[in-house]
Amino acid sequence: MTRKRRRLYTLLLAMTGLGVATALVLAAFQDELVFFYSPTDIAANKPAPGRAIRLGGMVEAGSVQKLPDGVTLFRVTDGVAGRPGRTVAVTYRGALPDLFREGQGVVAEGRLSGDGNFDARTILAKHDERYMPPEIARSMRQADGEQQHATGTLAK
Amino acid sequence: MNLHRFANPARFLRIARVVAPVAGWIAFAALLAGAAFGLVLSPPDYQQSETVRIMYVHVPSAWLALQTYVAMAIAAAVALVWKHPLADLFVKAAAPVGAGFTLLCLVSGSFWGRPTWGAWWVWDARLTSMLVLFFLYVGYIALSGAFDDEERGRRAGTVLVLTGIVDVPIVKFSVEWWNTLHQPASVFRLGGPTIAAEMLWPLGLMVVGFTAFFVWIVCVRLETELLTRKLRARLENSPG
Image 1 (cartoon, chains in turn yellow, red):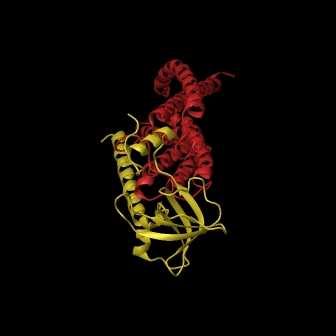
Image 2 (tube, one colour):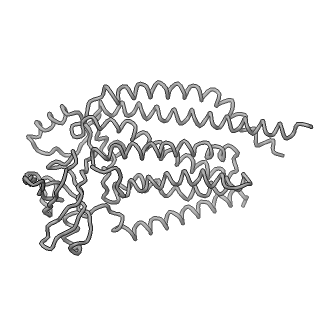
Image 3 (cartoon, chains in turn brown, cyan):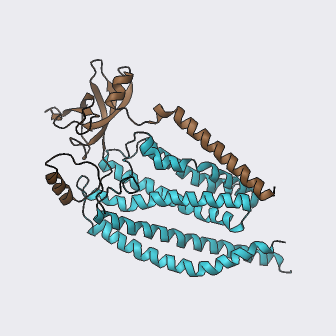
């Protein structure tokens, strides 16, 4: 075995070891690496009330209520079109980001209160991976009969 | 004894003198056209309106940040196993460029996050792994320059670059493996891109521009390094 060959095998062995070690570490910390919990996660894990967590999902269509004292009430759902999921009711006082909209993604930072309500301290808007001009969005909405269109190929 | 080491660099210099100006002009033209179409003439987004134009800088810099690192890791492996003299120099020449792309990606992303998400920065998996990539670049630059013996510095840097390659798939797949605030990929995904064609091709122009810029600047940096070495060798060998 030449020295080059030996160095090559050593490198391959080291890289394989490194890859396996990284995969194991990431798998072990799976739960800590998520940025937010979905309503289903919260229903399954029941985090202690008062513990700071992030709740993420879609702002349920028709659920946003703006009260006169600057408080916004809405529900976060992890259901997708045609498949209802769990929801969590959120209370938030303060200014909302521009992209906060019904049917769009949202991440709320705050705590669960005793009654299962979520008191949000911060609201972050989450947008999806689709980009298009307003005219295309409008015509797609018309074609879908005001329904949320399924993610598909826009560019040919 | 060292003569064979300059056989390839000499050939590289001949190629670089042709490639560098061509790449430079392609970069200039593509960035100019990409900026005109991306920043002015392309349509606004249906959700984000004009803010979406940050994409034309953010996305190419993110891709080039990752590609530069992959190229550096391949070169580092070649340098470690086959001791190719140009491979080491390539890693050294590309590192600050990659660090620049990563910084541009982080800063433009921050300016994009504030109006769309409502936060300059969040510690989600995508943003954090990209910050780690920046530290890897900066770490390589610091480590490879921290030894009196240049050869030892380069060897230590090579090992760091190779170790850090684990971060690249984490950056790429973080948005799929874990839920993040950052949205999933729009272009390289199963089922085709989810960007409208009139936004996708200015983005493509910018990517061509960024890539050509990378080729140009690395050629120039390598040329400079090789000529500096040649000059130093000649000065050391000259009598008196």
